[in-house]
Image 1 (cartoon, rainbow, N blue to C red):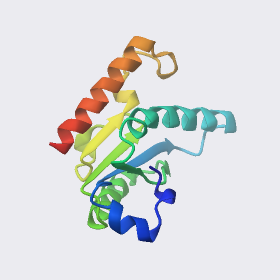
Image 2 (cartoon, helix red, strand yellow; image 1 turned 90 degrees about the horizontal axis):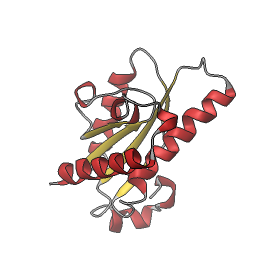
Image 3 (cartoon, rainbow, N blue to C red; image 1 turned 180 degrees about the horizontal axis):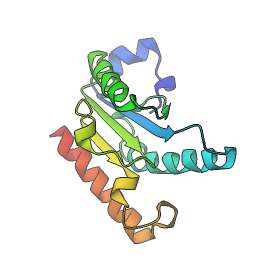
Length: 147
């Protein structure tokens, strides 16, 4: 569910069920051409589907953090902390092109990085079998986070 689909009246009733925030991170540098930017955003969109579709009704997708800066990890950490203070029990950070690991974002409950998961293969050339394996692995990690 997207953040923009929730009204203030709905939030009171839905908050106990929508306990997990999904925070997309594109990690753009500003040096990408327009067509490269589109490619980055499409990869992230497709990667977000791994979580948004199977967990609709439990996860709220927030606006993406787009640009990477030297202090970005600290800002992402603070944002995760703020989202939890605002009522989310769990925060998942997802990125397609940045090789983030959990240790870099201790305030996030889960960090999912397509670059880290697919380090053996080109991001644009994942086989159907590998994609299904990634999806299962991601779903398993989310279930483990909720336990």
